[in-house]
Image 1 (cartoon, rainbow, N blue to C red):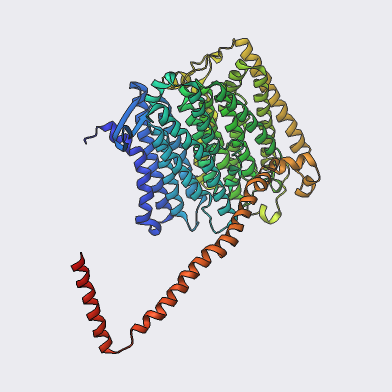
Image 2: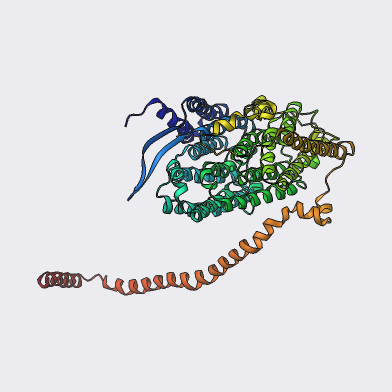
Length: 631
């Protein structure tokens, strides 16, 4: 099979990071840290450059369909190994390779002197490969292969420091919880095959309107259930905060910018089906709202810098699903992009703080770091302003688009979505003020050692800060004289919202939400900077019922342990004690006893008498001859 240049380039985009992964087994720890990190980063940045070329091709000529070979074939079903590089996937390719490449560079400094340095970069490369397969696939089965691959890499990276039992437990939890969602997704794929007879996106979209609406509803619900696992939506959200056990670059790459957005991507990719399933959309709105509000409330009482950002991620993902539920697919994707910029920046900034504080993560032991870590402080502040949606940074435009879409459905939905934004403003400003402003609460012995991060870690922060500042301009609404480039670019793939608010209503909504956010900023400044307030100790929090409920994360883990984990473990232990000892042990002991008995009798045949051996040989020959005669 001869391949043209576009097919070769398309194949190289995911193949190069895979080469980097296998390269680890060739050169492994033979290279120095700088060489190993540089080579691993180079594979991803080369894929980024090739993705830019493919993006330009899509912009100029439309979607690219690349079919390499038939991957699986059974009866009338053919599953191709093929890529669909269109307006949606081409942007995702840029996001995965661009942000992924920056995090690779950052990791060179963050993972310095770690014993598993080369192995860490091998895992990162493998993750990029699977994530690219996920977004480039032209069918659900190939996408599911990438989906499971990123789940594997998540397990490897969360539990990277596997000698720590807590980290290994967090990796297991992430893997198991995701498998629950993936099981529903497999049922969804079965239903797709049953009613469509194919897994190719374009074929399914063409037949969607002729398929029974009840079947479409079941399919979309099952796919959404799969998305709740990967994108950490209630009730399958508990794995993501625990996943902060992994190195901070892992949190930035997998749990902020790419993997957790796979569920959002799945729904957007299947938007033709979801447009025909109004009941599913109502479920998505409810789950998304519940997730964004509950996670936002939990974040109010978290004191680990990474845990605050983790629950912020869960909340922002809930907001994206909320947008999907109201049919604002372009708005959800817009926020997916801007969130990738500022949340990756927040996690990398948090990693810079942890690096400078020699491993400290409790924000109650920080304060006044703006003087010690000026560059980290500046970039972190930009990310905070972006996520709380103050103009003109990126988060303002994407959140406003979501809230405007919600208002078009119902003012109540707008109010609930805006409430989520106010929670974000409070816990993010609380985090910022406690870490960077006010009086230092750091022990003197640690203060003397605080230092700014090296340039290899700061450079990705600068780039992400720039994207967080200007990223919103990719979809400037008409109210500001913009042409909504992103929405129009996605038009061939994503159904556009029919919402059209008049400008006076848009100005009113933006004014109200921005004014409320500024009021929250002023309140938190007064409390944590002027008032020098410090979060309560764990003991004091335990004495306050409401605060304790939030600090304990609404007891989700405890409830799940009581309902599922403990009964299953008890049942398994009971089986082990009875079935292992009473059945398996007795059977194996019985076989051993029978063997010993037989061997004890058979060994008597070996008596050392040659005459007996000759007699046995004659009997054996006669027996063989008798068999031949009778047959």
